[in-house]
Length: 453
Image 1 (spheres, rainbow, N blue to C red):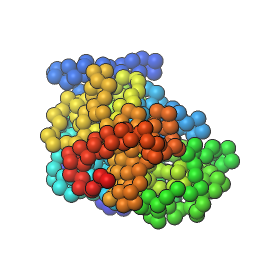
Image 2: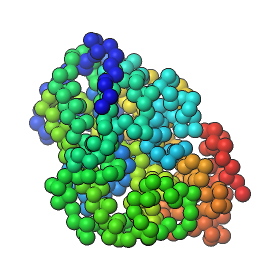
Image 3: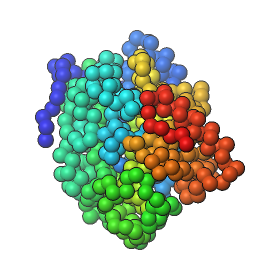
């Protein structure tokens, strides 16, 4: 394990928080209106909330019970989702490498699209760690080493890495990170609010869960994804990547259910350790003044569309859970089109800090405050030079430029993307309009891949 990277540790610390009261009054006080929080930020004595970012690895958007999956057990993530605000259409923008988690985590911490990754996500330019330190936060990171934003991690006051393989095979996913976070909370110096970035390595494979987590699930009772296929219908340009070799072709129902059982068990184990963290925050009377963000770097197929990995632009691979819970965040949900890279400017906006210029991410505070339904009307995703996609509130177009293939889905009627409508002549105007919007996105981000016929 690598040693810590620390900065100004002698002066580092966090603010104290007022004592909690009965749980019945806790939710009401945590749900302070956003306008009230903004006003408080300008008043003498206002204490900015502590911030905790819980980021998992390869967790599909539909693997939290409170978000609509009755077959998984996630009581602690459920607690955050039910007390906070859920973004139902949150996405990773995509990737220029098969390891989607690498650009995803860089985009999250830099607020910039991966097309500008080399120039802007080096750690020298604006990033979440520096912005929060400038806002008075002690910044603390503990997480996976592989395919991570290493240069940006150096900007934290404290940063340490897991042995990813050891964590994933320990049977107790997330335990080490939570142990270390709890140790920090118990020994923290006073004086500053804290930002904890807990970058978990789960439920990425290898997925090893202790017997008591596996015992929660019986493979034969786990339903297959509604868009399960034994084989993907065509070569999408990434059919032999390592993720796709984790199960033989064709994908059998028995094999997919085995993978899902292990996947769910690891998520339940991770949820258990997140619960330990929440209980300690309550014990230390920090929970009430802590703003949580829970999300994942990307999704995963696990049998959907005959695929296993995240190297596609289907919903199951690019869509992620996104929950905000804490001071200034109302209970509710939105179907607005948002990105993970929106988290950076959103957090700054919520605490009343200035947002650096030049970010591709947008603050979601107008949605949280009820001042806007959306911050964009279309959303663009991309994977290497083999796939491009765009969606609006209803339609989604995926293009495969190297093979001249397109897919069009009506997400309102077909959210699992099972019926390709691209060959139906009366949908030609929809395809034309979406292509034009895609080209606008490409010009804006500097994506030079040719998609036009």
